[in-house]
Length: 224
Image 1 (cartoon, rainbow, N blue to C red):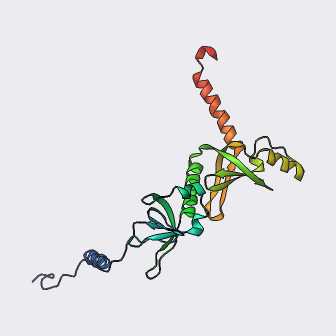
Image 2 (cartoon, one colour):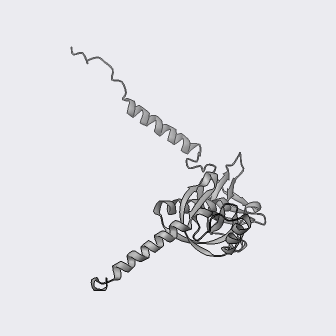
C-alpha cells in the first residue's frame, strides 16, 4: 500500500478562497449593496434629474441620487447656473455620503476646481505655456485667472520687474499689470495647500527660444 493511499485530499487554498470570494460577492448582490458607492471627495459625472427651487437633483450612477444645494449654486457663474437644464451632464464632487435614507450631498463648484487642479498638474508635467489674465496682486506678486482657480506669479518671476523698490513703487508696478494677459508656465501645484505657482520669466524665455528655433528651421542654407 502506497503512502498516499487512504489519505483524504485537503482542499486547495486558492480554490477555497475563490469560492469564499464568490459567495461574498453573491451576498452583496442579494442584499443590494452598491459596490461602486462613491466616497467623500470623489469626482463623478452626473446627470441633472430635476431642477428644484433651492437645489438640483443629480443622478451619479449609484442607487441613490444626490443634491446640489443652493449654497453651492451661489458659488457658480450666474450664466452657467441659468443655462443648467434637466438631462444635462455635470461634474460633481461628493461632499457627504448619505445616511439612512438620505441622499448624497454634491458640489459642482468643488468639481470645477478639482478639474482645474488636474489640468494644472498636466501643465506642470508637460511644461506647456498658457496665457492668463492678471486679476490682482498681494505683497509677494500677482494673482492670475486659471479657470475656477487663482494662480500666483511671484515678483521674482515677473518679466521686467525692477528690484529694490519701495512698497509704493512695488504696488505701482503690480497695478500697471492688472488686466494684462501673460504667457505663463506652471512651476508648482499643491492642491492640499491650494498653491498654484506660475512663472512669466520662464515662459517668455522658452517662448523666445522656440521662436529662434523656428526661425533657424525656415532659413535656407544660403541665407545664413
